[in-house]
Image (cartoon, rainbow, N blue to C red; front, side, top):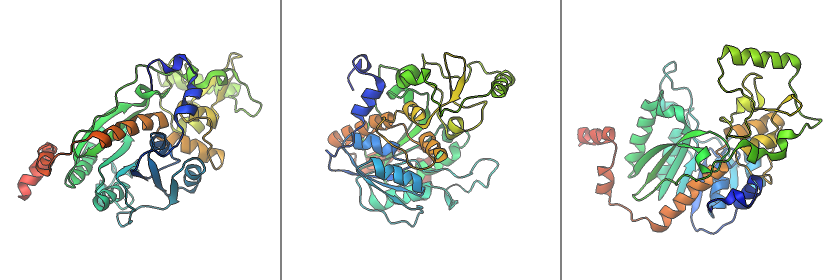
Amino acid sequence: MSKGQLTTESYPEMTNRVLRPFLSRPERVLDLFAGCGGLALGFEAAGFQTLGFEANPDCCATYNANLHGRCTEQFLTRDTLFPDAEVIIGGPPCQPFSVGGNQMGLEDARDGFPAFISAVEQLHPRLWMFENVRGLLYKNRWYLDEIIQRLERLGYVVEVKLLNASHYLVPQNRERIIVVGHKGGYKFPEKSSEVVTVGQALGGFLFAEPVEGKYLTESMDRYVAKYEKASKCINPRDLDPNRPSRTVTCRNLGGATGDMQRIKLPSGRRRRLTVREGARLQSFPDWFEFVGPEGSQFDQVGNAVAPMFAFALAKSIASYLDGAQFLENISIQERWSLIQGSLELVGS
């Protein structure tokens, strides 16, 4: 992406052009817990072949309707056998493991990470990567440490970064942790010099009053005012066209009135976002179609990895694969975390 790209074309034009699947690389990318294909779209736009696995039928249908790779509808476990791949990516779901839960961690059969770790153990990819919510760095850091320890033992340098999708041409403040396992030489993508605003992403949608739109009633408006006062809301929940949006979620796309992502129209009316508008804030191109009822489509959009963010990650991984000088095992072990190093000393 060249500097100043959005001065010559609109944001929707840019995403429609950049996020086009094509096959130009030899590596196969295994996409676990693939959702509707936001992560895979970024990788296919960077030239990779993808192969998805996802338990939700609507997500699988969306993936298969839009991408070159195929998505298999399957619930993944640690016993699942995976096809060969040089790269593994995904967004493993975290089941309840908080202080209030059972804290079973990787022993919890409902959790997605045992399957992801099993895939790495089976295939020994050249690189693996997973994305997750920022809470895994803080309240549940003990669990992230456990995951890192398991993956390091499989022979990888593991690096963790908290990245904001707004730094990678996504019109949304969306912080996610990115964890990458490699053999030495991987570099995270550089931030873009441009920041994309809601206005650039939504354009004329900010003024549209479609007949089928879902508008707030006067009683809802009163509730919103009461909600924002009670929650001491500094910034109103109405979308600000001059900045990136707050994080798009399933809940605030199709859920509660007080917290929902909404447009305040020039007429003074407020309305809920459409699926397409939510998808624009997630950086999906307009040609990408979602399958299923509206509620399912909102869930798919809210849960997805923003494709432009995924594209930046995919390009950084392509650079690694093209130019990496892999480390010897002893050098990799020297870069293991302090926790992992102590475990090795105890076990030796």
